[in-house]
Image 1 (cartoon, rainbow, N blue to C red):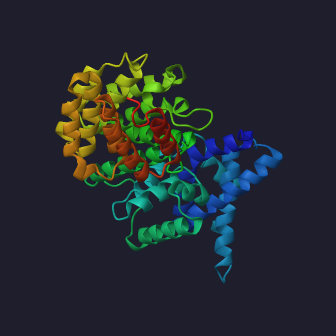
Image 2: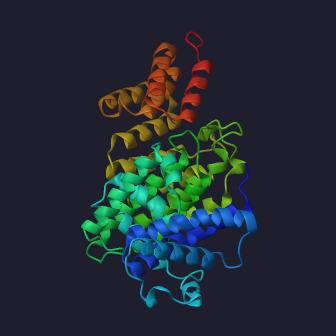
Length: 412
């Protein structure tokens, strides 16, 4: 079903203003939980009111007033004495504080607070999705495949930790920034991966756009770190392919089979610009190299036109900085495209990774592809069946089943 205009308008307001609104209310009332809950309740109110009566002339001011009223109501319910007058500022003052384009540092402060290393990684992602991107608890719960109650408890524990540990809702000082930036990038990348192909077997293009926005926000705020630009470039390049990654029936389409005319040329160009900014700083890193690989794919008119030599060279550089098994796997897959005559040798390289990647379903799917090229269909089917058992993603399971149907035993 196509989203209503009110839903689209609210999504835009949330992306731009939800984080800064939580920050302002948190500072005003001295309570992060109160502020975050007040904004979440205001979002629900806006969905009902805007769908019924239309988008108000000043949607930011509307949401701000609703959230402020919710916070005041919550305080009144929990207090035995009247609130002092200073808790009731003039309407004009509230609206003026939330004019478009103001308060970018507020959102950054909330992002860094949600990504504090004292919090568990699941809590960081959940808080970021809730507080910074404006998703509801129900939406975040669906992303994590947990109940709303479980997700709510996780968020409550994280917010209690923020209070107990005295975590400031602000950008850390220069000494603490490098480590925190890395953590912020990790969480943003995790958010995008959930959007890319979620655990439910679909993709959430709005959440993907939010992750791209967050990456670009961080890169613009801290432009001297080339890995910030690398992440922004990588996510922009990947998100450019979003409209081609699924069929109308919801089936996953592999990169080699995608209709490239559906790729977003504007996003691809943005990715290239971000990558150029990173290159100017002359400090290559893993995210920049991944972005460069994505950019090479984005430049190819067809799968056969892909510059595999350049991609293999980039993977060689990436393996020097990050010699992880997954990087070695991707390098071998690229080499198989560049040098098809070395398939048997590359299969042997993959077999060495069995202990470290035995639980990783793309590893078994890649082995199946090489085994079929070598004319070993029985082993290929066994590898695909292993991959099928290891993934719970509906779209990936359908793709693996379709491959098994196309290549039954004895068909080679």
